[in-house]
Length: 482
Ligand SMILES: *Cc1c(COP(=O)(O)O)cnc(C)c1O
Image (cartoon, rainbow, N blue to C red):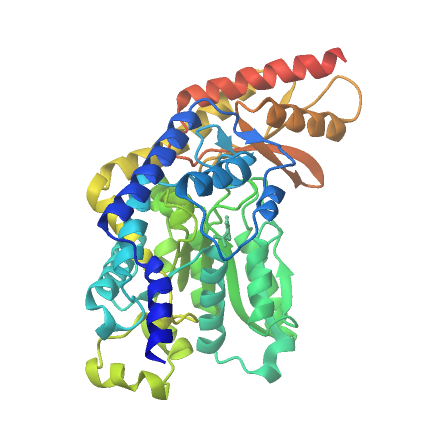
């Protein structure tokens, strides 16, 4: 038995490299990532390569190790050789992410020290950092000290937490679900619909409130619908507002909606996954006015704060309501109950998750290392870039251009002199994407195929807007010639 244990020990020691081995690995990883970042400046934003990805299956998981050069080779050929480069300044599609370098260093530290940010006593520091960031967000959103929240994996989970908290706080029970009414709009993100279903509310009635000509919810129509539903004996309980819709970046009239929510005792949830971070800059603050009067708000650091994917945040105005929905006692966690004082609430009591990544560090470290001012500047720059692009596009012949952007998204389409408009724009989108210097995406607005430019990557600057204009003009010409 001792011999066998010793043999196993010998083999398992490979899991714990010594300083020299660590140094060698690290050096190669740094070389790889540095050259990745260098190439990012010149490689196409999008590359199609049918071999990349499936090639991983030619190197199945096996008993034997592979050296670092070959491992990095597999990553280069299979992962980094195809698809979109989200880190590129030319990435102007969907809601752009970017990925701060400083966050990568934080993830490195977090993985090595592997602090447990779930229960207060296990890492008072990691939990305090969570708490500090949530209090910081509460401050610039304008929420009171009694608010509480969670560092999540993204906007979808944040929306789910907000909706579950609202459901419980509004006292909804299963017998009410088919009479419960949620007010949202045709522009509400689909993760809300999904969250309602996960929360057991698939049967709830969903009222699509009409939008104004700038794709914002019409508050007068909202109030009319609430009154009508109340009269009909239904249970209006939740309003979903968008602070930056994914399609057009429109911000709903939050102050007016908060007024209505208060008057009729509904919960106002703000889906600010894309847009809430703009409250950090003066221009955004104006647009998001009223956000501070909501009951819950979602913001994705992996969008508006440029953190790598896997970072969301949610805040509940009255933190006790969040605790009430997610608190749990388990026998095997009893030590933490003994060790923690009652006011040391742990993240696991405010969230559906238990064990989780130390997410706070990847936001805290960049904020400390870089300071807040460049973040504010980058956000304001993105808003101005969208306005600049909007203005330049309007000067070009032949383009229909959507409303002046609330935040950093512009929607537009080319109207050809003859032929099918949708078909032309589909070809235009494809031509721009295949060109690779910039990457834009499309959507349907009022049933029409529409192009959109979204600026949110911290590497997107003025030259990219000029380049996009140039590429659009070139491609329109080419398609018209055919
Ligand atoms: C991106 C987005 C979401 C979903 O967030 P994930 O982080 O992708 O889960 C929800 N709402 C809006 C408005 C978004 O833009």
